[in-house]
Image (cartoon, rainbow, N blue to C red):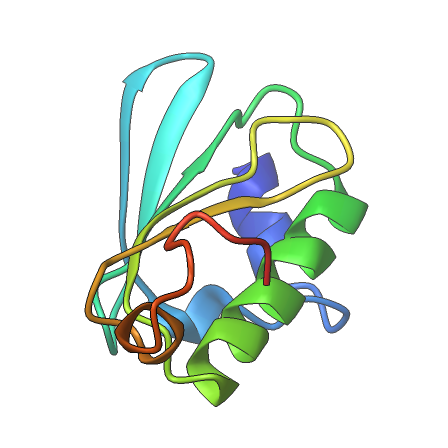
Length: 101
């Protein structure tokens, strides 16, 4: 419930974009975006408002850049790790698909 509260926070505003929340362990949950089915891995026991704001900003950024995202991982303190697919716009130009966005 805490995770849902953070997702619906006005600072985050992601609840309407999430179609599914699945948790296989207490320390790992996967959110899936409804529009492009991007899996976002979070630790529901340690997630913070700042982390969810970072996820929302990162999601906006990869969409603006038309990147094909395989997974976003927000379990690490202070960062969101994004793994992009090889046919994303930057990958098509020959850039490393693991590059930071």
